[in-house]
Length: 614
Ligand code: SF4
Image 1: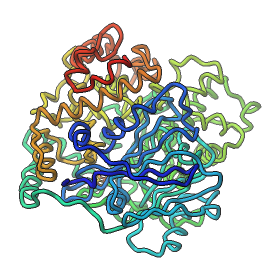
Image 2 (image 1 turned 180 degrees about the vertical axis):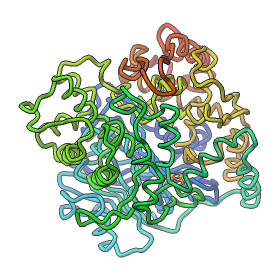
Image 3 (image 1 turned 180 degrees about the horizontal axis):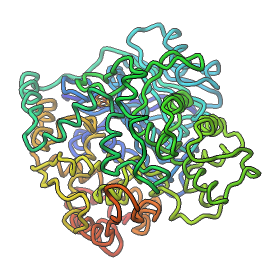
Image 4 (image 1 turned 90 degrees about the horizontal axis):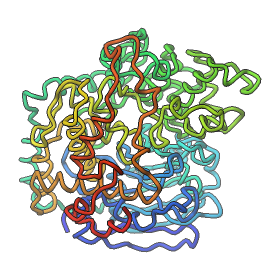
């Protein structure tokens, strides 16, 4: 088999038994790898009664056929499980080097089941797995854990994926961290790891699967990296990421009202105080790239306070969530709060949105100093840093914020229309009123409000995918056609956590992706069949969510994120969700009345076994 080892490792932490799970070539062809393959593997276990924090919830760390090849921006790995934050399909991916290291162990991934009675870490190398004591690491942050394990394992090639105190304390949006502050941040999978008493996974090895045609792969990479003239505006975005990191997008995002400032109630703020230029001029040390990536959107940032010399980041999402979303314009505190999130291992997006919601509730008088023990006012940078600490430690009001905005609204008796989430996942830092395509994506993406599955703002900025009939257009268009284009774009994007490819990769055409996959595996994909693989994976995740209780009524955005703004370039704009969603369901072959995939669609996708669950 080319491109794969054809097996994943299963570790049962309850019994301390391990076994190899052989992967069928038929499943690899249908689901490619990564998140798509995980959906196939986890589908039978997914039920309403499955407790996400119980021992029976399997947690998968997985790679794909592109991992560790010469294809740029493919050093990612994906982690999947039932999410403790949302109770539905959970999927999160991270960059760095851990994915390549995991694949070098001789396995395509590792599935962890059961629960250890004391803290442990896994050491996997060259086809060998050891379950080791992690009592000395429990209670430590990600960076200290990484340093201790690096010394303890004593192997230069070792890469570490670990939780901080956030995962240990079962914060509903705990992250799993690796390398230079790279985070599998979304969906709370760090809490699944913490519930299993699994502190870290350490991997290294030399066993990488062969590529079928390396010369052909080189030629295909060269061809795929030629950016067509139609994508020049997207190219300038990539150049900006190189120069300023992803936080470089903050200026443009403010101009086009893409930053949900003041908890989705504003879009205009003095961006120059906290943008990529300010970071570069006042704090910048160097750019940091994931394995084999020519872009290098990561940042190592000079900090020099609180006994910390340098920190990773902040990324755009972190800066916007802990900055303008909370009306915080103090870059110093944004950098520090983002670092604390990384070290504690909690998602910066959900953390920032939960703090901003607390500020919104404080202003409304729902929360008071008596109830919270502190003032929680807009833009109070000290309060923001303090709340990050309280959330990670579940102290005082932090214990409630640690549950995310959906449960906060329930707890405080506030309408869910004021809680910025979809299916329980906090809305990321792209305002759905700035790009109506994003509104449809948030409503329908398998994990809830997801900015990577259908980053439709990239399309309407200029990065169309012509061979998938995804054409850049009016960002405020509310048409059935726009809803349909989002569906096609999501099908393509669903492949990215399966191959894997970074969202920022310039390789986006289904034709190029099929050519690269064929060169790696000796298979015979074409643009249509590769798009169908993405559609299959997306639909299987939909059926999983239906099994978990999701219905059409959950494909909905809260009013706080759709009510027209009174300022900025999206002033007065509101997506017509009914029309957009009708076009989306029709394109998907889903029943417009129920939002369920039809029997015919599942049969067409080779998912007949899923018909019983719709
Ligand atoms: S663009 Fe950024 S996140 Fe993506 S692979 Fe490159 S360095 Fe990593």
